[in-house]
Amino acid sequence: MIIHKDTCCFFAHLVSKNQNMLGIIIVAYKSPKLTIDFIKREMANIDVPWVCCVVNNAATEEETQSIAGATGGEIVNSITSEIPLDKKIYILPSSENLGFARGNNYGVKFLTIHFDVDHLLFTNNDIEIKDSTCVSTLIRILDGNKEIGAIGPRIIGLDGKDQLPHDKPVSIYRQIGWNLLPFIRRKHKTDNNAASQIRESGFTYWVQGSFFVMRTEDFLKVDMFDPNTFLYAEEQILAEKLKRIDKYMYYENSVKVLHYEGGTIVRKHGTKASYRMGMESNCYYYRKYLHINKFLVWVYKYSFLCNQKMNRQ
Image (tube, rainbow, N blue to C red):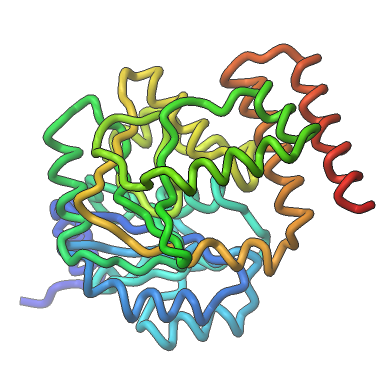
């Protein structure tokens, strides 16, 4: 019996769509070596069936080819194109820098078109997974409690300090105070560093966005990340969106990852540009999601500009 090639592709697609698996999204920006090292080193530590897409922001053809060649990945120039379904790594180049929110959304759209991914892992490429059961543990706890909308592990920076979750929104008044009286923030950081950094597992307001897991169903139900942010505040906004469907973020300290602390953000965008992106994202978050009045948001923005001016003097 002769089976047409298109029929084979169709049945392969059905098999893929019937296999529940983890969809991993890596949003990369001008960091092909970091991405390659992460895939080669860390994918073996993911202890559940998975498929991964790399959204290569502001990509050159050379960078994309280098990632694909080193990892055995398939380059996909359109997320709706027919693809070989026997690969584990797919590279999605974008000539535009989509940022964090739109980049991750783009990756999720690709995965949900071609695969039956019941869970999503959002991860930076500057992460080292320290526990071999990290991902399966997070998924088990997530699926054991329907109130959990997103779950993150203990994240430790290169300085050995925990990058803790946040149990409540940072008040805009505190932000204004930190900008106008920066010594207050320095004292706040000192006090936090002096305190015990290992906190108990439990519900929190938002977990760190460098490594966390969600159900695909929940991520789609809240309409994914808000595409109006480019960088920063995505986790807080996601927390607010999850609250609308009666779900919350959860911190699990029994498993951990090491975070190389986002050095590429500062190196590629610059410290001042990164601070400004953070301020703009916060303004959007305060206005749309916390419903802070426009005047107070303007005061926050003005205090930020004053702080930047003081730092230049």
